[in-house]
Image 1 (cartoon, rainbow over the protein chains, first blue to last red):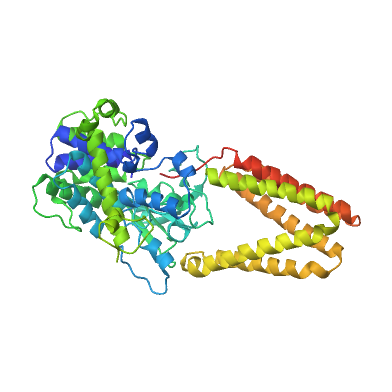
Image 2: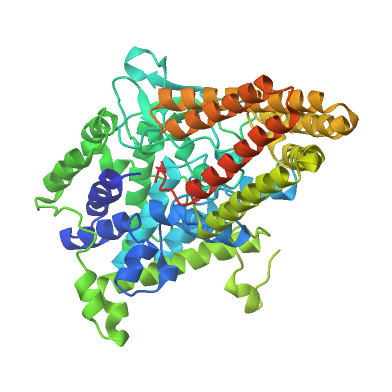
Length: 370
Length: 176
């Protein structure tokens, strides 16, 4: 997902869950900041590098693709952007090497989503924001894995947009590898990452082979995922994004203490009823990014102005704080939440017998793996 | 490229340059060396692709491409191995065919890159060099040693390109 959903839509969801304007800003800032907190940024502010929640293009170019490098990549991307759907999935006739990658495929409504929300309960607003980013991405990035893998994340040229205004008529999507040209929505021409036959190439990480299609809320399309045994998958982004929004409201109410429990496959559709048509119109509007529309909706809801996202807003506060006081700063709380989230997901992946995210510290504390 | 990859590419480039110089200096042994290097290379990558296909790619949509690549590489490897005991002129023709084929593949890749809006000039120059080498070998086919020098020039050129590419900034399309 993009800034339109992670920042502005998360603000709206938090407001609808009952948070104040300032609390909403804290939550949505952290939700968007997950896409900005790279090792390069952390080095700049002299913060722990293990809190990295993303990797920049330049960092990916220098990333190793041996087992250590793969574990480092997987720890970040599986923990924050492609939360695995089923770490114990079974597929007949597949070997361990294949299944390790297959089990990292991101799906919504998983056990890990429950754990992510539970982990944020009673924690800072920054940690809540991180959990909302992770949850939202499970809907957008479903069917792809947060580990480099040709056999899981590859796609071919069988890509069709389904036009809802014309009875889901199929329109062929074309891909190109031009980094400078923006996606052309009118001509159905999109940029994706180059085909690389190397299994562990970083070009085969996440949804690169599908370009930005998973991040556009308006689009409904079908394609053949590499793992799908030639069965078509229909990705209905307007529907998925609506569920993501409703699930965020439901989770945020739980985190605020309104509800006693959080369960997956439950969405607070009642909360959006008065604005259902407006939200649907925003999601279905054919545009590269919907920030302005979500921002306008958020300001209408709260009656307050939503400041633009600035990733460097809290740098000075963090850098000027004394060593013992850093944890109390905005970035300090974010860093703490990020480390906890990464640790939880890494531990769960390791416990399932999968070493693609590396070793869990609990192994050394007596936790062990299955 | 990662630092390790740059170092690896540079080392390979240096090896290729030294190999080409050695073949020029010891031209009477050139053919066995060329065939041995090609055989080992084809068989190694052929088996690597075969193992990848049976462990991973056979479960993937379009995974049979890996199998085809493996079979072609292995076939080339075994064929190259079997050519060690035949008149040199036929070996030269075989090398010409490999170069011409590689040149054609690079030409198609350059054309595809150009259509996709990606960088294509380096691929195109590789294609031209491969085809030029193939043609030059045919033209001088009766002068066996001259053909070796032409072939060595090709390997020398590829070694230089490998080193240059290792330190070249490349456009990296990465969807975040």
